[in-house]
Image 1 (spheres, rainbow, N blue to C red):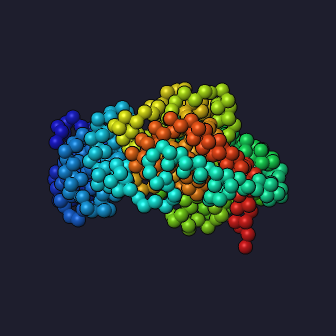
Image 2: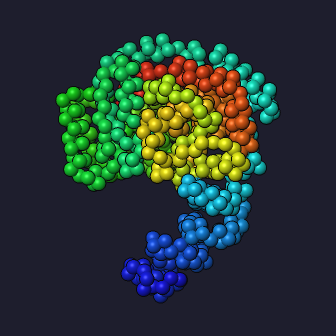
Image 3: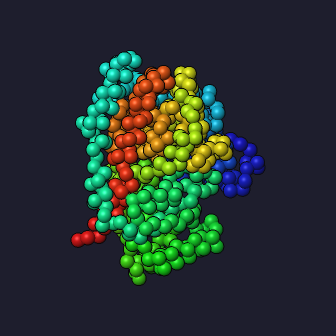
Length: 521
């Protein structure tokens, strides 16, 4: 236990309450939380270990104890905890986030040995970790090459591309009837659409690599809409309380534009997010006096917090726009509005990048690694351990300034002959990031951890290469580095497919039709 006088008064008070009544778990938890807030991790772990003896073990207490052990560097204590819970499926599942998240953060900060030590505690015990190691490979639900041999894999990929081009595989590519999309979209042409979109996806992190307002404006104009965009931070990303004068000015711009230009549809990024209640009320007020539809745009729908935002906002929306078809089930089935699940079309900056950039990297990865998407860290950690060559640029706060813009990001992807995209966010969930489409538009072959998410939109082995284990990843990375012919065939077919199957008119038709039908009886 640290010396009490060295701690802030509120911490000392919490410790005294705990010591006066060591049988009260609430007082013990408070003391542990206060110590953790001062980074007194091992002292906090000692108190949480005591909490676990006071009655039935609560999962929240168990994960708090694990977090204190890991944050304090007590690897042996963490190892004993893993041994204690081995076989308890729910405990293992919950603790995986703590251990994998800590490992991913250590890896992202360059502490490879520490990261491996933490990950090794859990990789053999949890299904996703066992999958990475190849100890527990999931059953195939897509056709795969029968062996990891060059000739077998090359022949399999070429046949997959031929079948996809002929329309024999799902989803259909060639012959996807662009003319039919154009005809179906005709009633919506020239409709006034206002796009309210965050100018920076992570405004406080000086990063702008996620589909921004220009993506949506460009595709709306390409589809034939009369579109405008308002670049927003306070309406979409930063709580208004952070800068009330600036937030008020932004609200005034939104209100004036809606009142004077009178859009028929508003596409609103992250509508209803916490701290933006004033903007929600602004839209409600305008709808009492004007007629327009509201579409809530949500890029990644994989966390409970985002699902809660959507559920709260549902009554104010005519439609919800996701990029990820799997995100609509099962947690969001209660949303009583239409759901459009279609990807963005961000080709222009990546087309420009590939025209000015010569591929110089065999394999590259760019993306954030954090406790929220720690599966990426695990794969990259294992790649480094196995000596699989890859150029890695991790996201904020570790990425160089050159890669923090769309142009810089596009240039990096265009320089990669193959790009690694890891859709798994944690040991339980996955989401479709925009990087899938961006990599295809950069003509970089997509190498992706195998999830059902991507299979809704692209055909395995024809448009991208899925891998299930670190050994498969090692083989495909080496194979694609050596086989220019196969790599070029995949990249060319994937680009043709996305242009054919997901033109701007299809995207906007899905969104506008969904919104138009949502409030009909």
